[in-house]
Image (tube, rainbow, N blue to C red; front, side):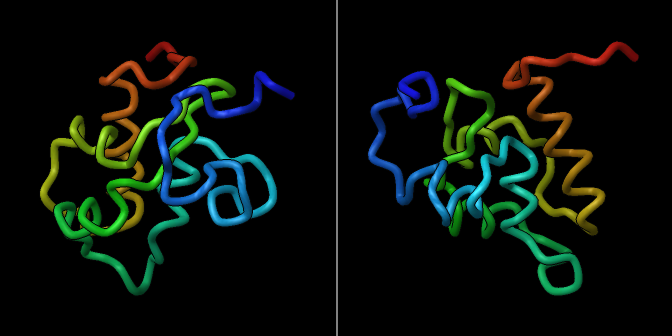
Length: 107
C-alpha cells in the first residue's frame, strides 16, 4: 500500500484519500474539484473566491501525484464560470494544458 500514499510530503488541510478528500473511495482530478461546487447554488462561480476558499486543498491526480487546487488553477484561463459544465470544460482543459493528466485522448 506504500505506492498509494501521498509522496509529496506536504502538510495538507486534510488527507487527500481520507473521508473528507475522497468520500470513502478514491477520487481523482476533476471529480475532486467538482465535488467542491453545487450546480444550483455556486454558479456563476468566481474563480478568485473559489481558489481563496479551496486553494490549499489536495487533489489527487493519479496513484502517485497530489497537487493543490491553487496549483491547478494557475493554469485556468477564466475569471468566472457561468455553469458547472463551463467549470468542467475549462478546468479539464487546464489539467490537460498543464500536463497534469496521464491520459491524453487524441482529437
